[in-house]
Length: 321
Ligand code: CP
Ligand code: NVA
Image 1: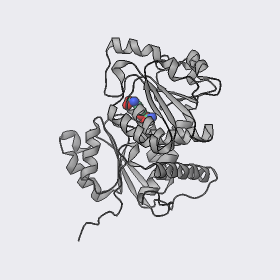
Image 2: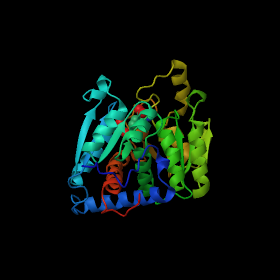
Image 3: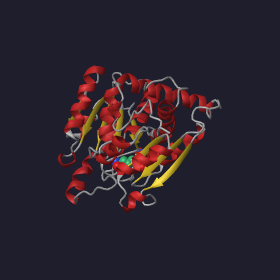
Image 4: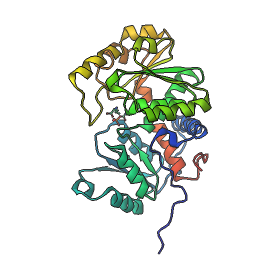
């Protein structure tokens, strides 16, 4: 019997695998699913009988639980597969793993160290592959954060997000997702923590279409002038290490009350979590009235559900067709 071929093999490896129209429609659909969820509307019909494989090379709380709970709420099933439990941990290739899993499941989500690993997974999978964080990008967080921004600020046009700290995978996804929805993004980072110039160029090309601006600065005080959102992330990402000199340089980028005051009275504070209070942000800011960090965490669930419905079902709005 012939192996059925997928008609949809869309992969979300970086945020800009979506067009601006697809990104905004997906976020709107996530908002609709969120409202339906709170209204108690049945959602099991969307993905009944569908399975998501979730490969984790490194730890996770939000990504794992939001995908797993999301699949359950949609009537499907999610499999947690740590690399140590898979034959991948004994040297089976990514290519063979992708081809085998594609015979069992309807989509694969993977959290990997090297972005190239997820590119390879997608190259050999015949089902959709979702990047659940790589060293290059964290697209499901970036897109979910745009839903949080819209909920708190009413929209994206004319609004500005300042990201302070190490220009890592999170910063990359924020410039790409921000550009897609038309949100201005400024990154302020020290010289040893610069973003990938290719990602910035891609974000700027998208921003030219959507009317946003993308800038890379060094001065955190300049970066937060007049912004609507101050965002930060851990200084040392999973699998990375920084010299003491580099960590010392990052101290100037800590988000504290002084930075929030400089940003202005209406600015909100965002962080993808997990966080180290007292390092990249003070507890006063993280747990203060301007912090929306737990709304961000919740919105992962709704964004993941929208993405899964669009990838695996014909019952959604058909954004990825
Ligand atoms: N923000 C985020 O991806 O969190 P986890 O590492 O807990 O999945
Ligand atoms: N930049 C962080 C994000 C964690 C969700 C990391 O990669 O560890």
